[in-house]
Image (cartoon, rainbow over all chains, first blue to last red; front, top):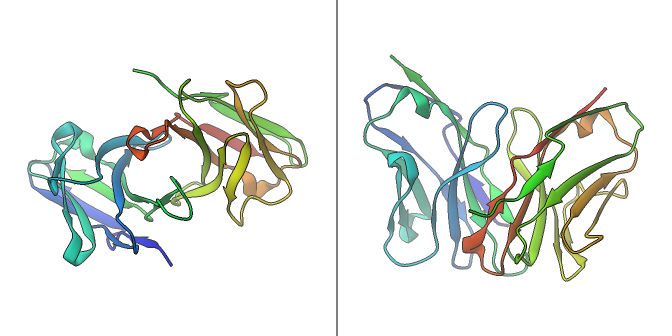
Length: 115
Length: 113
């Protein structure tokens, strides 16, 4: 069965430090991968997406993600975190075979930024 | 940039009442979805809709739920008899035919009291 795993439920990072959020997926076909960010009580904002091509993807707000097929991973990174990056981050996989277009989300990683 | 519009942004309803959540997808999009997020939990797929019929529905989407696209622009989610556990944020999404165009609405927060 397809699954998306975000191993870290909660991460605390100091402002200015680097951030890496992990995402692993289990899916037989070519994955379409997304990272979304959600502030409390708000909607989902797309940070970046990967479909094919260059495995290093640049997104908004200074985020990037690297697709590694051999590790079934799509980790999100930011070199220097700002206080405004405190939010919940969701990795998602789009299913493209029997459930076309359906997104399966990970459980999310809550990021706390300390001064 | 085109948006998916959801109304209302917040709805409070009494248990047992019917609610209709409304969405206006992007006009040239072909596939439509509803997702649900219970407070503090992950986003869960409810239903997908294509060519005026349900393509797939999850276990959550029981007989109390229904969707329709009554006029070619609106896409609605109806909960016939709400329960306390239906309290959640409901997101509508649409895509044009390729997944690259995935667009979410800003959500409707449903509170059942």
